[in-house]
Image (cartoon, rainbow, N blue to C red):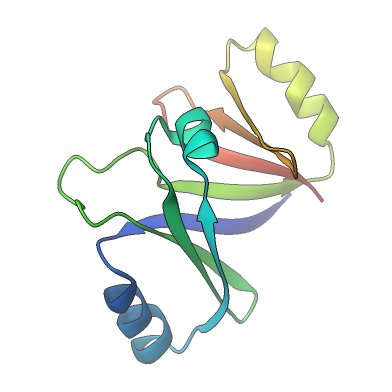
Amino acid sequence: MLLNHVGVVNKSREDALRFYRDFLGFDLTREVAVSKELSEQLFAVSQDIQMIVFERDGIKIEVFIHPECKQPYPNIRHIGLSLENFSEIIEKASGYCIELVIGKTTDKTVYFIRDFSGNLIEIKQL
């Protein structure tokens, strides 16, 4: 198993660029909008959310821009794991009463599980 990425929330694109790119030296590698449909399915947020991906030294950080970034934040923060035994984990989840959260668009399917405290973990096939 490998840590694939970490997802965090920032209140503005400018703040994210200034911190992750300018201060920490990460490369901006991608910018996309997570559709309202997918945001609702995965994070229970009823709006499109801008996502900026930064990478450096094998570390990937997904920064979700949410201007109303006040406590409590929407539940967007998560870690992403790449798994060799992806199918086994999906099957095993129900036996452990672990919630499987699936988001689908016409282009892709995204899988999350929640730990016993409600933290989101995105899972991908290694």
